[in-house]
Length: 330
Image (cartoon, rainbow, N blue to C red):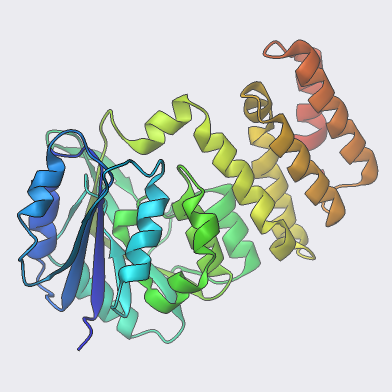
């Protein structure tokens, strides 16, 4: 008989946090689950910890890569394809869960017929397990908050990221399997955001206002690293490019998408993502989000960025900020 929940734990060099993560999974009050343990060629000895769980009754797979895959979402894809449960919990190896996480989220999910995923509020802890004052949850939202329309998607998954930590999410397996997993594995950082958006286009996303997850902030966080090397911003270009066709015809959603995109454009050009920026500009024109005149003006911005490279003159930047970040732009 298939388990109700498949728990995927993708690990990479988290030896300092992995034992606590594993304890918080195996000690859940809800026990109808399988655990899929994945290691992406760790060099810190943490894979040896995973090996000790090979004969655990709840563990269905222990897969240890000998060569690093190059991206965390390749591990997500592998785990999703192995999962047998009705629901999937991707428990990142440096985070921790409240013992009631599965009990509460599964109960909530079972009460909904149209659920794509449910996410909870998260407390923030540091590398030494000290609780920070910050609580991660959608601003001014409580239980009953639902993402179900294009306007909601553009507000809560594009304009802002209302699902702050993947470890605090319980996915409907069928819906998660239905998104493009090949596209997912190409992301380096924001593949979770891509997954949430694609799920929201197919079903509803619910928020359960209970702090049942602990997100760990530390120097090795993937988001921090990818912000520094600009990979985060390239992934945001992929997010924008991918969602354009779905937003066509909804003025409000398109406006939020354009605002999000144009806030990234100078960083992306400075980082050298000229080809992808031009691709996004063309797709926006093709689907009617911008006029031909604006498309040409954006081509000039790409040309200016090539000429001036990392020192784009203030007057040029200011012109584009006024033109494309003004709320009246449509």
